[in-house]
Length: 54
Image 1 (cartoon, rainbow, N blue to C red):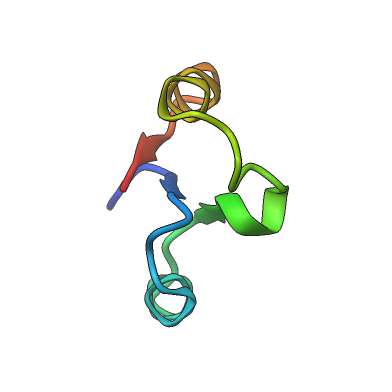
Image 2: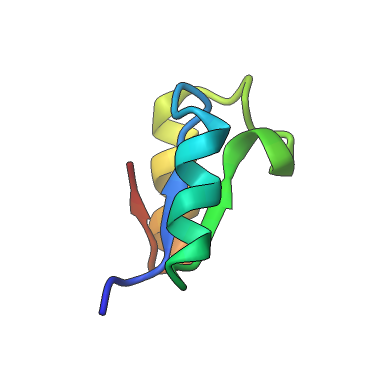
C-alpha cells in the first residue's frame, strides 16, 4: 500500500484521477491552491503531513 501522495501542479489531473480510482490517497496541489508555492514550500507541507511528493 502506498503512503498518501501530494501531486505537484505539473502532474496531469488525469493521472491524479487514475491514482484515486485505484484507491490511492492523493492531494493535488492545484486543488489546494498550492500551484504557485515554491517547491520547498510544497515539500515542507508534504513532510509535515507525512506524504510523498510526486
